Figure 1 (tube, helix red, strand yellow):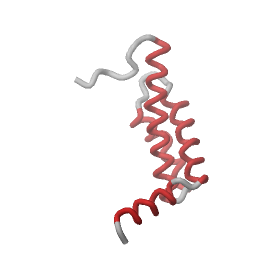
Figure 2 (tube, rainbow, N blue to C red):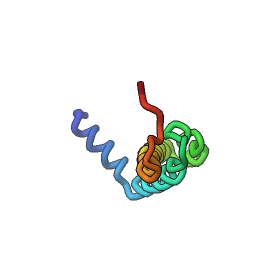
Figure 3 (cartoon, one colour):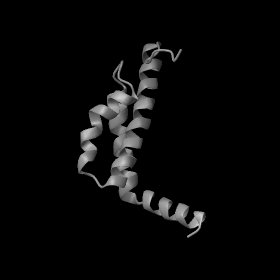
Figure 4 (tube, rainbow, N blue to C red):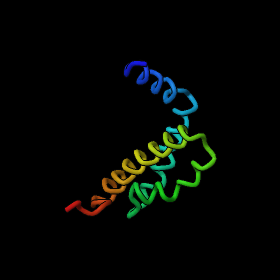
Length: 91
């Protein structure tokens, strides 16, 4: 199988409606937990990790990606509403 065949197979598996629904649920949950001040994406994934234990492996990884993205977005929401940084500076 060529690279493009494998890439197409990966996209067809990842873009099913069930996996997209898990990504949406993960992004919503990640935003809800990530909007809390002081809780970054790493802590959000640690809190919500047990939710993915009962999912198939691909759906669990996709949901974790949605949680991470939602937590990043939630942290910026906190920073904008409180006019201060939600996370410390990287340096």
